[in-house]
Length: 233
Ligand SMILES: Nc1ncnc2c1ncn2[C@@H]1O[C@H](COP(=O)(O)OP(=O)(O)OP(=O)(O)O)[C@@H](O)[C@H]1O
Ligand SMILES: [Mg+2]
Image 1 (cartoon, helix red, strand yellow):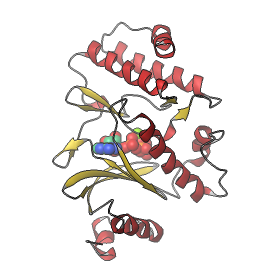
Image 2 (cartoon, helix red, strand yellow):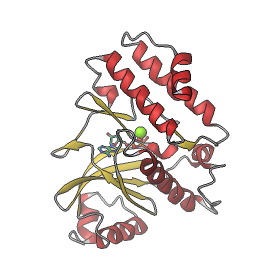
Image 3 (cartoon, rainbow, N blue to C red):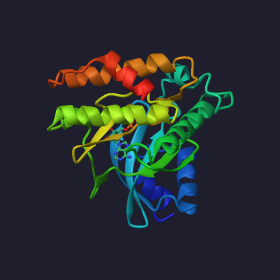
């Protein structure tokens, strides 16, 4: 590891537990991470770090094993045929990181989202969205200059995910990064396949959230029309 375990701990204030440190070391050995440089976001379920790999910027999302609100998580993963039943919280979190990886891999190339590089245990490595250490702002903090056009781009993303068999299930201005007036969809861990029992409800909620946000910015939009467009192409 370029940074010794001691140095990694020092940089991040001792936040990594032993098992996460070992997993990070493995990702370094396998050539997915060169260094972790700074923290981008601390959240209830995960912290996101900025790092680098062969001169390229990467984002590293580390799910907390303890802090996670795992009852809520189960709503989005129970009934997903891609995952075996977990026996404890740790296994659920590992599946959760794997789920975000699989969802990103499924839709990357069809919509704008980070390309996933690797998921190992509770750690996901992916493209960094931003430049020169600065992440692209969330849509919430960087409203679009042309809301109508931007709204249409997001509808295309919802449609693109749907065509690939996926519903995001936590879509809102918080989980969209605004890269040069183009939406980049992030945080796909909640995403469910269309055969999930709650897929329809989640899709309606995503569309509702997006319409609510854009209506407040003066866009004349209708949930039913958007839903019909997403479902019928
Ligand atoms: N690939 C990325 N490139 C750049 N920044 C990112 C990337 N992924 C996440 N971020 C930053 O980290 C923040 C949190 O990421 P994300 O939404 O995936 O985590 P979260 O699960 O919502 O965490 P929380 O526990 O706060 O809800 C984002 O708002 C964004 O600022
Ligand atoms: Mg989020």
